[in-house]
Image: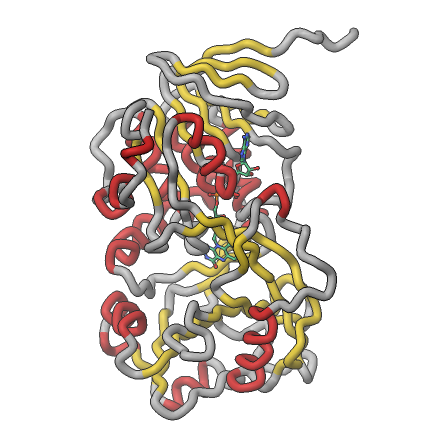
Length: 392
Ligand SMILES: Cc1cc2nc3c(=O)[nH]c(=O)nc-3n(C[C@H](O)[C@H](O)[C@H](O)COP(=O)(O)OP(=O)(O)OC[C@H]3O[C@@H](n4cnc5c(N)ncnc54)[C@H](O)[C@@H]3O)c2cc1C
């Protein structure tokens, strides 16, 4: 039978734009509450153009900011629930070492979130992570809950459970614009959909999508070099498959922080990345000039030589991902200031994956007009000057 050339038309209880990890969890929570939900994704799934692709993300209890530390127990619990519902293993507990200069405020925040007895002496550090070198004036802490979330597998799992609860996922369908109203209209490249509530979780594309709604959000997409480093001695316990995750904060040579994960994705290659990148338009992400300098990779090479001498100091694999940063690196989770049935989740600033089950729950609660289960003040749109003045 010939395919109809008519665009699809349908009405739902809720529409979610963007099937990255945040939108997929928001849709999952809505479907679990028996709301007929449409999740729209511009690319055919799976894809690697946004922020949620790849094999691994770090999760942890250690957090420099108490507001996120308070959300983590809820997040661990919800990840476990998804594992049970999907019948999939999504998390591997490896432990996490946090290191930095004594007295550094971010490190102190992590120490506070963990408790003072988590400081590692030299013997304990050598036992947990023999390949990691500390320098004079630096200290390390141990987060026993730290580990790896299997990102691609997790995204698939949450989308599968969403569909099992009756949700509709349409990929390869780009939202062209949003027409506000008591019942919103959302035209896409293949249809026109309506719903009384809308959640926008469009990652690095969020700024462009909400601009016609009179919002100028201070969102900066960054292109991130995802680097994998070869072990000098394959299978060595010093920095390999059995190592914990780590994060280094407050180092003058790496002011935005460095993090690493064991060699799980490519045999013998340890993932070590700089927690920052270069400003990028998501549509032009791969247009870096050939041979252009990559300061983040040079910085990482120097970090590897100094802290992880068991690895070769040049990357064996470099992949690309996007962060979408806010000026304070806190998330945006809020209603549109004028159109209260439009909810926005954005600006996850490179640390949103582990918290996605809670973020999705909060976005769902906001969209249903329920009391959010965590304090929302730190995530308000109006904390940024100039955003409201631009509202239509
Ligand atoms: C290299 C790297 C390492 C990271 N490491 C960690 C970590 O260790 N721990 C951690 O907690 N977090 C980490 N993060 C951060 C985390 O991965 C992100 O915060 C999270 O994936 C953001 O998800 P998202 O759903 O907001 O964005 P995305 O995954 O980009 O999803 C947005 C989706 O919206 C779609 N979309 C956009 N516009 C439209 C439209 N008009 N119509 C339809 N669909 C549209 C896009 O195609 C995209 O699929 C890391 C990120 C990167 C890049």
